[in-house]
Length: 561
Image 1 (cartoon, rainbow, N blue to C red):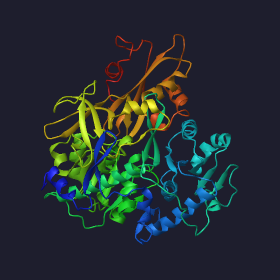
Image 2 (cartoon, helix red, strand yellow):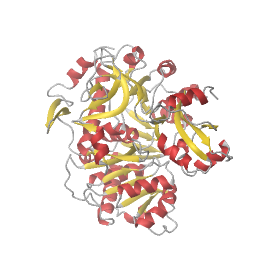
Image 3 (tube, helix red, strand yellow):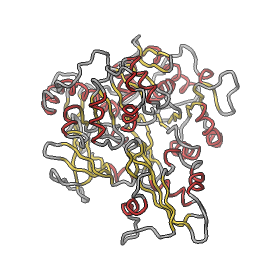
Image 4 (cartoon, rainbow, N blue to C red):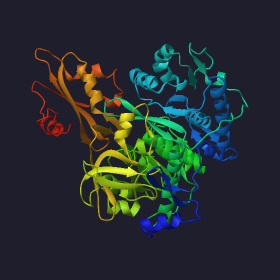
């Protein structure tokens, strides 16, 4: 690479530049912020109104930015006029990757509503919890999610708008087809917004095993989008001999769900902000993704390491032209150093990248790319970033020197405001403007961050967070289960897979298959353990009675299937 990171940041963020950085003090917290950041997300959307450039490509459909904004205005009018959505009201979105997801999101936050992203993989029970927790004024869902939500929403008298339903048939009681609630040509309602208004609730696993709603403001998300964009410019300034000079306009292929923070913020909203083309995938299919990359000359692939492995290992890879790719990577799960080398070897111009982010940071954090990533393949990037500071602290919250292992704390304007209706959890996570990430790692002498483990008892399977306590709770519902403990096992493709050890009650009979069948209707498919061990021995514990999960893996799962 040419410039080092700090010199490149100094150039890109100098006074008078688009990405100029200054400081802002709120209360006792002082942070670096972007001087020219939009105040609200609606300001970003308004900037796309007159653009005839293609924004969305979805299964043969092409939507210009202007087309999307027409639909946004019409649906925003429906939310206000038909459903009475007011500033601060929640609007839940439950669907796979569809253009209507983006329209519903933009419409909601443009009228002061809070967009609540529901996991489309959740079961009816899991969706019901989130709907009860967020208490939305209206839910927007595709057909499959409508079927899972109907009973809950009817009981709550919460209306549902059906996206891409069978409009030739009558909508079920308590629902309306999208086409029946929008008025063609309707304009955006006039609503006063502030950067401090809440804009999103994205659910993430919490300390109780139940998902927690992470709330972010307009300002936090706008600052995040500026930070991601600055990263792209900084990478350009640091371009070295191995880096490809793009010949194609910047574009992204959407290979992660929009309900996930990565799909929503750094991918979809970045494209909306800077008028990049977004090629959407309804669901993940590596060969289909390769076809889209070739057809639309996609430059950026942002997903989880699992998807990078899938692309590399796709049998038909050699048949597709992937020369347009500039970056291949993302975040959301550990990436083994071997993957870095494989990406570098496999793609003609696409270089590996990895970012350290989480829902509570709006996916933003240190990022490792290109030559730096080759030199430090186990690191998630150099710190500090443009607007984020990183510290390693001990269990008393005291900063540690380089090389010392402790909990990773981060601070910056991209952080979430707090957990929805959970003040105690918020106070535990946010301390004087710093976020306790729950991850363990260290910084080297150059400021490169190395993530070693997680304090949180959570499994990352293919980028999806799985909380052990939630899976254990379901196992404990089975009458033959005496004790249960869930842990993650390393997996080359998924990062980790779910494993469970079950102590069977004396006199009871149960098989692994029976337990799997018991859990399947109660948990999303990705949470169901792929490996089970049944035993009559008590689980190993420490002096305080806590199960020693490291002992579980060595005792019950030594062999790789």
